[in-house]
Length: 288
Image (cartoon, rainbow, N blue to C red; front, side, top):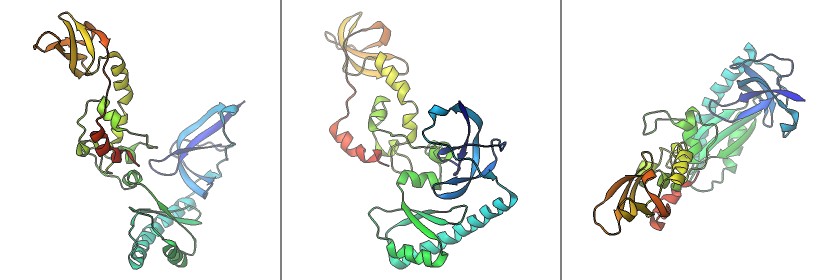
C-alpha cells in the first residue's frame, strides 16, 4: 500500500521533513501549519504530494493541520519582530553576566511556546543565570543552543572566495564530512588559507568532485608508480588526473617523458600519501 507524503522545510536552507497531506491539496510554495517535536510550527512545502510504499516509512507520518491563513502569516511577522527584540535584549544580558559567548541567531516557535538562542563559544559556558533572566523577561520557555562555526556560517551567510554566496546558506541542507585527503587526491595545494572557507573549516566544495577524482585515481597511475613505457621502465613523478598526462623519469635516462596514461603499463602503483606534518597542520580544519 502506498502512502502520500509532502516535504516541508522550516528554514530557508534546512532539512526537509515529511508529513501526510491528508485531504488537503497542497502545492509547492504553500506555507503549512504542522505539529513537530518542538510544538506547532509553520513551514514551506518544498516537495509536492508524492507516494511511497508504506514499508519504507520508519515511523508514521503526522498529518498537516492546515494551509497557513492570513492570521497565521500575521503571527509569523509578529514572531520575527519578537526575535529581533530578543536578540538585542540577550546581547545586553550576555554583557551583564560577562559571558564569553557570541549570539548568532534567535528563533521563536510559531506557537510562541519557546525562544531558542543560538550562540558560539570557544569553551563551555555556564549560562544558567542568563536563562533565568531571559525567562523573566519573555515569560516563555528559553533554550540556549551552542553551535559550531559551520552552522554559524550557514545562519549568517556571506560570500565565499569564489564570489558566490556560501553553499551552506544557499542550497546545502546538511553538512557532509570533508577531509584533507580529498584535497590531496585533487592535487590541491595543502595551504590552510586556500583550503578553508570563511568558517575556518575545509571548504564544502571539496566534496563535490571527490567521487570523480576517486574514479580517475582508480584508472590512473599515481605519483611514485613504477610503469613500463616505450623507452623502458620508469617512475611517475607528476600526474594530471583530468587530462591523463603523466611525467615519467626513466630508470636509464635523465630525460623526462611526457606520456598518456593509456600508453604505459603499471608494474607497481603508487599511493596517495599525506605527510604527517601536513596532516597535523590541517587536521583542525576538518572539524565542525
